[in-house]
Length: 84
Length: 395
Ligand code: FES
Image 1 (tube, rainbow over the protein chains, first blue to last red):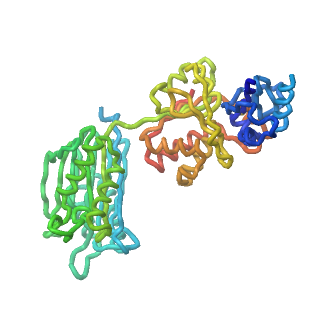
Image 2 (image 1 turned 90 degrees about the vertical axis):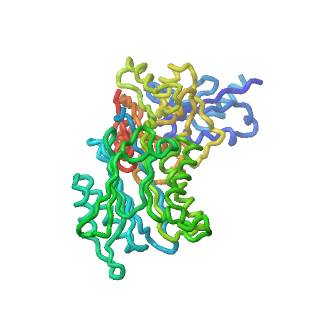
Image 3 (image 1 turned 45 degrees about the vertical axis):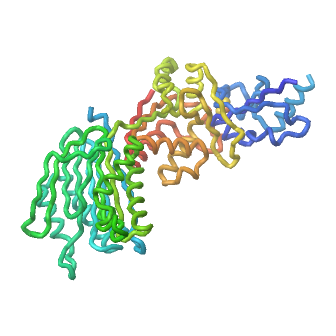
């Protein structure tokens, strides 16, 4: 199966608001999710200035933006996409 | 031609084995407006703290006289008259070499008792234009050697204390008179032939180490070597922050000198501009990431040296420069920026002044300074503490 693309923003705002804790996510994933993603870090994705969004840190999973991202939110989204 | 040149002045010293302080002293002063580079190397009589004080008094006075263009004989006599006299040997003093290098002009060297300087063009010795020995009325047994010479781009001057030329003294027939100036010069020529671009620091260090080795890894005297190298400056660029007006983006990006690999890009939006121009994407390696780093990891983009996050990284770099923190204690991005700064003579900052609104959000856990201010402070620190030339262009 094609791996999911997980992009973590490492720009100033996202990094300060928690992206730093997500950078190691690949090694921390629950066993059912491990090995199913390609994790990449990116410079500021430009989302931190979007007033309509809920807030940094931002990550993208297969192009879907996750706001106020946490590991749990990322896992939930991964499962949702896996089931679909 | 000369205004484009950089004068690299570096030295390396060993303290006489068993002494707490080095009895030699070196002082350097750059008078940028006059295109003058002044240096004094002094060897205080004896060794240890007392010798250090004598040497330091000498370099301080000599540097001041050089700066004020005082007559040579008068400067030398004033220095010798002011130093305390050794009761036993009835000599006051310290020996010294004074260098007044003028870019594009005549360089003057005055030596009192120190080993004669060496001027090398590539690995060839260059004789002085003029050499004169003068004798002071106050100190008839002391001779003052005065030289005039022309420094061309690529030339080096080597000045040392007698701890270098007399190293090895008595260590077998080869060193009956020590390493001597001729041995020192042959060694320097060999080093330059092997590495024509060798930095002043590397050459000074190498000569001092060789002197130390010849003396069977002890220092019977203080060892000091200074190298002055006149060459084209090594320039790096640091691009940070998007320009205030979007339509200046392309002009801003042109300043990255793409392909030259001497440019660091600090900041996400800045990186985005360059991604657009180069058609490539920044790649960040998180495999080697240290979680304790506390700075976002650096990234790669073809045609530039490195891409990093902006304001947190720059703030960290400033703190390290200001507090003289060793670069290798810093997270990767900060360490690499500082290492690159130290390897270059001139650092050009190209600074976009657009403010990122998100950085003003009061809910951020840490206050973020404006780019402009932090760059000004980095520039001042490089300038004052590390004698780097800097230039800031705002966009
Ligand atoms: S810092 Fe993450 S979107 Fe700007």
